[in-house]
Image 1 (spheres, protein in one colour):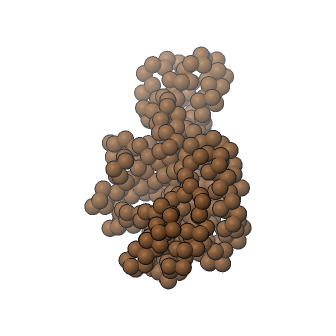
Image 2 (spheres, rainbow, N blue to C red):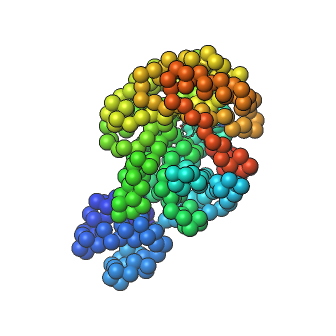
Image 3 (spheres, helix red, strand yellow):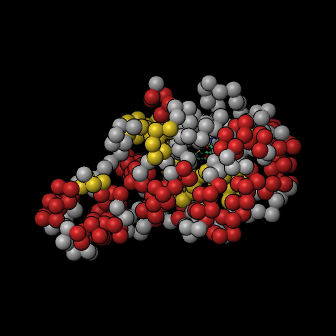
Length: 340
Ligand code: SAH
């Protein structure tokens, strides 16, 4: 069976023409699938019965199922969703002043092996399809009965390790005939797959890029993020400069503050030096403590000192508001519990 949600509008047009039907039906069908989010071909009321029958024979409309929802007092909802092969992934719904935001997963598991991250613990299973990335938004809009205006690619998985499907999903989500979420409302976070940062810069997508930096020297970064063995910090920042040059967009650097590991005043000074002259913004994240790991959250004073140091050196810095404190908020925690 064809997973019809995987087709881009152009692919759908070709497919419809191959069925010896008029091309314009593709637009109608695309809207039914991606905007109206119907679950059955019979709901496509302006499509002839004969075409619907043809579609039913060859295609299926694949949906993600909600397995579990954790609700936080602050309005954050964490979802465990199952895919058609019964693998499970996580997505998070958050309420911000600038709109409803969803954090999507891009892979089942992750290969990156970052020491502080729960997503990587059970290893890597497979890439998500573009339709499975978009499907997370669809499933959650349906469950919440609310529209989602912002998407962050910061759930389980490394988006730039699933490059083609991720870029395709951004284009699908962007499409005004579908969800119509503007690229400027989409952020993608990477641990630093350097060649694909260059590739993304050349795509001419206006999405915001976030870099999970977390340390300023190769030595320290290697300890917590093994990807640094492949792509050094200097190379990574070079790629970031290229991204800014090509897109004109500001980059957001994520920095998880871990007690005694990367949170000294000197670390802040080195970070400011590293980012000097870049159109950048630092987002400090008090590390989410996960079980079986020795890392603990930085002390309140260290977080303040880190922020003041960066600010005084001209680096725009925010501390990420901790949403979902009372639920398994850290990436991968809910799935990990489910697997057990
Ligand atoms: N693989 C991508 C996207 C997923 S992780 C990346 O690395 O950017 C999304 C963000 O959450 C990253 O910045 C990641 O470093 C951070 N993160 C993961 N585990 C965390 C934890 N326990 N506490 C705080 N931030 C964490």
